[in-house]
Length: 397
Image 1 (tube, rainbow, N blue to C red):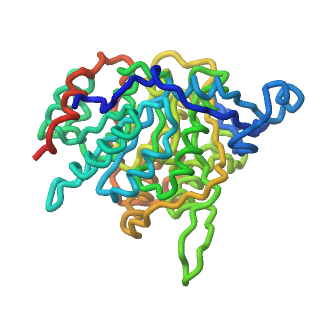
Image 2 (cartoon, one colour; image 1 turned 30 degrees about the vertical axis):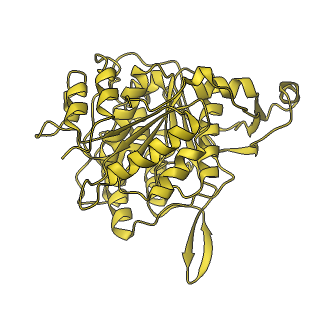
């Protein structure tokens, strides 16, 4: 078996894609070249309408089937994973629409149980049943590091291996997506219990890219709710424990430069998001748990007109936030995990040169800011053939 585990190319396969309908937010905040849009919402995940309907309803976007299918085929979906259940991974893969490239980047432990090999078994079975394309690799594989080093040596640690953070996995996935010719890269967390929610997220990704009016577009998922069991009852909380804080701090930074209060950012810690490739190439990814929050900060730093930009500034950058209709069920990894996410997100914001002093002092943290990596757009391409071959090797020891 070779790198991308497959039977047929995606262009050789046909599958049904249904239209969808999403509200078009009329309100946005603008800072420099960056427009952050109010949250849009799903009207129909599966629509029976046609494009003529939307001409009469300018408050929403109708996405015809052919536009969504084309966007699926130009999208790489990256799934960072670490020690998740086999059944959960199986459900995530099942939820990703046909036509999308899939890259699973693992930081799972090789002992006492070889979880990477367990992932491989799930993926091989899925591919044998579906003929889908999946690249499965381990983040700490020395061969992968060697393939990346000529392009982005900053991503390697003192042992010469790729650092084992989530942000590093996302950056690696984005570089692979560029090298395989995708025009957008999306990210899905591997701990999602609901395949239908995964399917909705990726459909939103494709709808965002297909309807974009700027080459530099980011689409971020705002969950309808994050249910959890409290005192024996299922409670549909609106925000996660880390997202609540990161949204508040990001909005305070944005409000400072707007000169008025705003609460427009609702997706500060959105693990599920999509980035057009021209924008992904310009972003400086943060490592570890600072990745998602760091994207807002980097957009404001580079393109917000606050400090000197790096290179040319695009005419417009759109951040599209879309609320789902599916709740977001995922594994509760405990307060320690949430605290690490929250503190690293805060550190990412408060250590930025654009963070006002009063905001930084209001949110003290002992967490060091996560590493930030240079944009990969101006770097040489990675050795994708070497990476594909490495994906068929055994778990690195």
